[in-house]
Amino acid sequence: MSLPHAILTALLEKPSSGLELTRRFDRSIGYFWPSTHQQIYRELGRLEQAGHIRVLPAARPARGRKKEYEVLPAGRAELSAWVRLAEDPRPVRDPLLLRMRAAAVVGAHGLAGELRRHLAMHREQLAEYLEIEERDFPPGLTSEEDRLRHLVLRGGIDLETFWTGWLSRAVEELDGSGPPVAAGPVTGGR
Image (cartoon, rainbow, N blue to C red; front, side, top):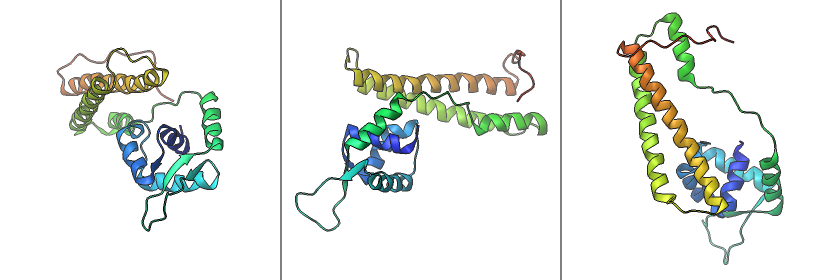
């Protein structure tokens, strides 16, 4: 996914000013595609220059008025074409996993504490996602839009469930309170 497509998606959901868009990003799309406010503002300028979005005309000119953006037909076409593209899954690229591999070489002193910190953060994120699910997705939602948005949230819930389970086992293993990890078929590495 790219930032321009994330912005087009958000603006098609609701035309917004840059500030409103960054706030909405922080509460939704930013969970799985984080971006800084500066990146979003920079991309708004590029999308406008490319003819994918425009500033909505104001009823009356006002100094200091927030620009509100909407998606133009070219932007909708770009987003539709992007949705239809085939894209291979990307490998996980998490610095924590690399640090664990490095700890196997230089020693794991202090690593269990970092794993506990990550575990706490993933538990907190999981709780937040479950709260959003309960609040925003009651049983019986049937529109395609609601089902797709719920599936994205369920993906986040499932990922956080994976991380909390895996990190719990990793902490137990490093503390010596859990069973050793069984050796799998892949021991070396790429």
